Length: 369
Ligand code: TRP
Image (cartoon, rainbow, N blue to C red; front, side, top):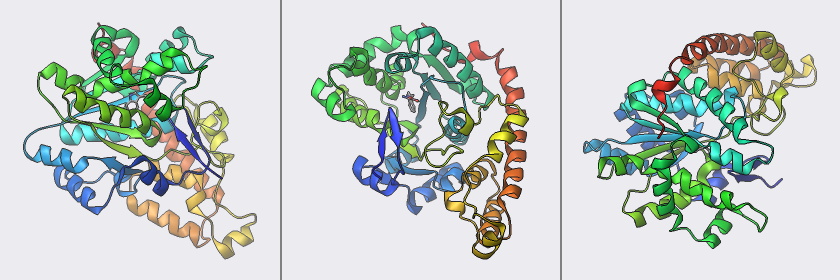
């Protein structure tokens, strides 16, 4: 089946090798991992496991870093739903980058985008999701002194004059070719990508000199940043470097975790019993009968339970052991599900506590104008 990867739609079984070629990004290879290890002191499990699988200009970024030209981080969230655990994964990695490189982070909340692109959502809806999502972002432990979070609609005095500079360099035919707009697309949609470009050079504007920027994102966002990289040099700024993650699967068969399929998504506020119910129903790589499972072993590669296990269990040895046991038919799905339920519930218990505490910190993280 043909797959689709755009900022608005991810469908089918994604062939990442092919995406690398089609999008013109570079694979994260041993050379890049060595650089990470050199400068960060260690490798995050998501790098080792190639969840982050491709990049642009990381070699340049590290060369600048070596020269003492430090970079800042930029990432974002489109607030179209409450947060599920798939959303947390790139943010967890961004937090690690911030910690290791003592980098400033701009976190853009695109409430404008979700209002424009989602017919069913009002401005009140996206704002409600935005402020709820921000609790999860803060709960992950970003450094308050190095992090700024903003909603596009509440930071528009700063963003808008810069967005129109970007917009002036993008023709309608480029926007159509890259994003597939049609005659019935609303005109806000067509303008939106210029808002997503701004944080990639905002720190340079503020500093009055060019500062390298690194953007971690799930690869579906690539179209925005291809355009951004074309435009920024025309305005006198660096092209941003970037690092891209694969999609986090849902608990059903195929597809990424999606808030619109609540039974295959674990929300950060789910009670332990909900988590248990959803994971017990999850799609696994197990065989039809126990006998077959013993004889042939399971298929961790296609198993959603194993996928989540490897995202939330940071001990590499444990992950490798479970994979081996599964392949050899020494462990059954029910047991793995129990292990995962336990890990996720422990994680969520802590997260929910931190989420409560985050409520009093929101104003300290947010910038408005
Ligand atoms: N458009 C993104 C979304 O729908 C949100 C976003 C804005 C973003 N800026 C970003 C994501 C930078 C990653 C990096 O979720």
